[in-house]
Length: 310
Ligand code: KMH
Ligand code: ZN
Figure 1: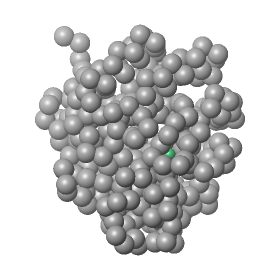
Figure 2 (figure 1 turned 30 degrees about the vertical axis):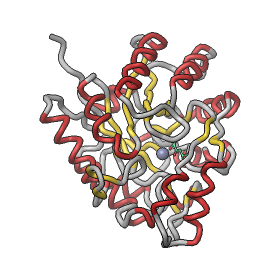
Figure 3 (figure 1 turned 90 degrees about the horizontal axis):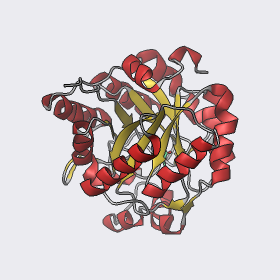
């Protein structure tokens, strides 16, 4: 029997969905983002998917200065692959959203493969009081946001970042996004092996059922053949179950407080590292090995940490 591929664990440390009121564990100061990223790498994450936050109030930030406050520390303390988000704001243009990736030339960055409703407004009902002024409006009004990632936006990212040899985490929230990605490959925007993050359970995207995972995987097999590597992210309560299923199907997994604040149904996680340790335990108990950062670099064809600008 062919040897099972190793499982790459990505940890998405803080994101742009959850707010400080929702969990004391959600990091937003540079110090806390760095500490949690380092602990997640020590627990077994090979890739760290990073957003920045405003240190004063935890608001979403795409300001390169806020990334500069933790990137060097993360690099010094871990061998992990740094992946910088280009999706970090629902309110900014794509040119603004790629500023951190342009400034720091990481080994990877996220690239969202279609425009969509992207909403988390139902979360607002769970809280009567909020830690910071901005949070309630931000969460409640997410039902009015369009997460804009047009074909021209995608080409813009690909062309602007091409000289940096950055590998993309292609964020696919629905099956149409796979066809968008195929089209973009056909016009020469991306080179194999591409890395697809199948995303389930975001309101506006495909739901978190195993049927959908199989459907997305089959569709990707048909569209990309051997030209792709893949990973799964289940939002909220779907996180651990879908990651477990993905690893058993030969895929890679993403966890982290960006995607879910829980460690088990109804129980808040105390840190990103706790989620990494849990999925690592499950993956290893079920007979798979996790990939080191260098093995992940090899599997995804990354340029190497020495070629980043931080
Ligand atoms: N901020 C969200 C709308 C990514 O990192 O590329 C989407 C997001 C995805 O954060
Ligand atoms: Zn993200």
